[in-house]
Amino acid sequence: MGSHDNAQASFLLDKSAKVFVAGHRGLVGSAIVRKLTQLGFTNLILRSHSELDLTRQSDVEAFFDSEKPQYVIVAAAKVGGIHANNTYPADFIAINLQIQTNVIDSAYRHGVKKLLFLGSSCIYPKFAPQPIPENALLTGPLEPTNEWYAIAKIAGIKMCQAYRIQYNWDAISGMPTNLYGPYDNFHPENSHVLPALMRRFHEAKVKGAKEVVVWGTGSPLREFLHVDDLADACVFLMDKYGGLEHVNVGSGKEVTIKELAESMKEVVGFEGDLVWDTSKPDGTPRKLMDSSKLAGLGWTPKISLKDGLVDTYKWYLENVKQ
Ligand SMILES: NC(=O)C1=CN([C@@H]2O[C@H](COP(=O)(O)OP(=O)(O)OC[C@H]3O[C@@H](n4cnc5c(N)ncnc54)[C@H](OP(=O)(O)O)[C@@H]3O)[C@@H](O)[C@H]2O)C=CC1
Ligand SMILES: C[C@H]1O[C@H](OP(=O)(O)OP(=O)(O)OC[C@H]2O[C@@H](n3cnc4c(=O)[nH]c(N)nc43)[C@H](O)[C@@H]2O)[C@@H](O)[C@@H](O)C1=O
Image (cartoon, rainbow, N blue to C red):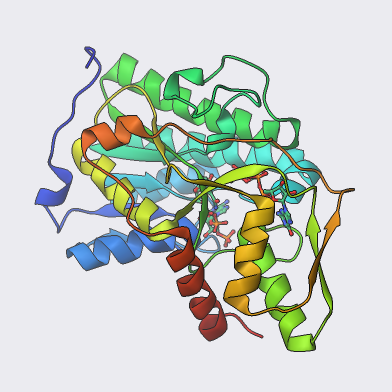
C-alpha cells in the first residue's frame, strides 16, 4: 500500500457509532441498513429524500452540523437503467455531482472518520479489457448511453482520492456491478433490466399474454450481484480497506440478456414467447469486472443468480402492489 493508504480494522468494533446511510430507502441503502442492524449497530442516522434533499448544500451542512455522524456510506444517487440514463442526461450528471459533492465535502468538514462512496461498473471504458481491472479507469471512451452518470461517478472517485491525498482523510470508493434484490425499482421503463423483466413476465403471466417484449438483441453480457452480497461487501470495505484506489465489487459471473430473460421466464413461470425489440439500445456489449482485489482482501459473494432471482420474486409477490 502507498503512503495514502491507511487500513484500520475499527468500523466493526463500535456498534454504537453514529453511521449515516444516505439513500436508506433505495435498493442498496436498505440492504446496508438490514446488514448493519443484523450486526448490532444501534445508532444509524437515516433521512428520507423528503426530509433531507442532498442536492441542497446548506441543508446538508446543517444536517452534518447537528447530527455529527462518525461514519458515512453514500448510497443516495440518481439511478436508473439504460433508458433513463439515455433520456435524462442532465439529471444524471447534475444531481449525482451535487449529492456526492455535498455529502463528501460536508462529511470531511464535520470530522467524519471514514466515508464509503459507491460508483458503478459503467465508469470503465466501453471497450475495456475483460475482466475489467481497477486500473482500466480513464483509459478510453465511455459507453454513450450512460456517460453522463459515469462522469459524475468518476468525479466521486477522484474526489475521495483528492481528499485522501490533501487531508489524509479516510474516504474509499466501491464499484458495484449490476445489482438486484428487495426494494429495487420496478418501473416499467426507467428501471434496470432485471426488475423490469421480473415485472413484465409477472404481468404477462397474470394476464395470460402470449408474448413478452425484451429490449435490444439479447446478446450483451451483464454481471449481476445480489444486493445483500453488496451490503456485506460494503461493511467489509468499511472495516478492512483504507486505500487510495477504488475497489470492484462483482460476482465474477456473467450471463447474456437472453439467458437472463430465459431464467426469469422460468422463475416467474411465464409460458409464452420472447420478442426482441431491436429498436432499443443494447448499451455496452460486456462489462465483467475483475474483482480479484476484493477477493485478495478476503471477501467473496455467496448468493447465486438462480437463488437470488427466486428470493427476489418471492419478495416482489409479497411487497409490490400487483
Ligand atoms: N442498482 C444498481 O444496479 C447499481 C447501483 N449502484 C450504485 O448504488 C447506489 C445506490 O443505488 P440504488 O440503491 O440502486 O438506487 P435507488 O434509486 O434504489 O436508491 C437511491 C436512493 O437515493 C435517494 N435519493 C436520490 N436523490 C436524493 C436526494 N436528492 N436527496 C436525498 N436522497 C436522494 C433516493 O430517494 P428517492 O427515491 O426518494 O428519491 C433513494 O432512496 C448508487 O450510487 C448507484 O450508483 C452501482 C451499481 C449498480
Ligand atoms: C448498473 C448500470 O445500469 C445501466 O447500464 P446497463 O447495464 O446497460 O443497464 P440496464 O439494466 O438498463 O440494461 C441492461 C441490458 O438489458 C437490456 N434490456 C432488455 N430488456 C430491458 C428492459 O426491459 N429494461 C432495461 N432497463 N433493459 C433491458 C438493455 O437493452 C441492455 O442491453 C447504466 O445506464 C448505469 O445505470 C449502470 O451503472
